Amino acid sequence: MSSPHAAPRPGATPVRRAVPPGLLFALPFLVLFAVFMVWPLVQGLWMSLTDTSLSAHAPSFIGLDNFTEAFGDAEMWRALGHTVFFTVISTVPLVLVALVMALLVHTGLPGQWVWRLAFFAPYLLPVGVVSLLWMWLYQPDLGLYNHLLDVVGLGQVAWLSDESVAMWAIALATLWWTVGFNFLLYLAALQAVPDHLYEAAALDGAGAWRRLWSITLPQLSRITVVITVLQILASLKVFDQIYLLTKGGPNGSTRPIVEYVYDIGFTGYRLGYASAISYVFFALVLIASAAQYAALRRREK
Image 1 (spheres, rainbow, N blue to C red):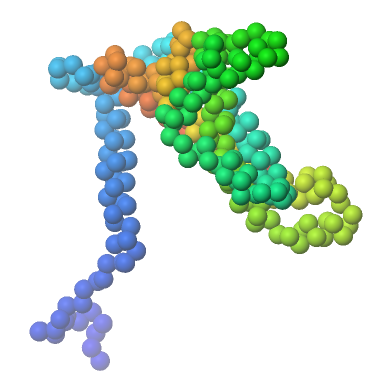
Image 2: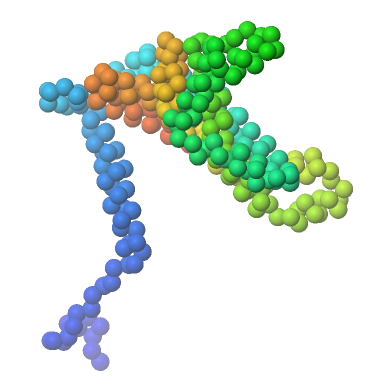
């Protein structure tokens, strides 16, 4: 009997270990992920440790000086405060309004396809179109909202030029624009709730409100966690609509942290410092997301 470790016979064809087919399918994604995600992250981290700028001088290594400056930068913390404020005033209605919209459609409103189209269609619009539309709605003299205020005898509002109103106006435009995505997620979750739960509750004499509080909302707890976390992340990264509507004004009262990074990097030409601020913000977002997700999961259990 030959040994299992015996050398292959002369002239025998060597056995080649086949490449797992799953790796071949994943290879294009892995390559693109490495080129467009991993490498920019590594390059950005290195840039944050240098004094890289758009000027002609060669960058030099400065260690953690950019991070030290960032933690003492009052304007950065002000922009971060604006970002957190926008996240709070936009996330809550974007979750609650989406839930109400999904419940209304799921209960069987006449012409459901019309309601579904009306609720989801704004989400398909590009940000430039949405910003232009709402800029006209917010016009001080010709805008629809001030016209309605004049009709009911109230004074006009400087929607985008009043520091105390501008962020609320942007949050309202964001709600109209993006609530359709959350509505779609809630509607899909509602359609997945087993019908026998409602049938058993109806046999027990439970009314519509009791079925809502005892069956529907508990069944939606998981998707609510997902929607809330996704919405917080999306609101923390707000930039487009604010830049197009107010450019961070008036007097910097609506400038979010992403726009501050843009101003530092491409207006102030300090790419190294902008990279450091980006990584500070990235770390804060990770901490906030992990804490929020853990709290929601604990509450769900």
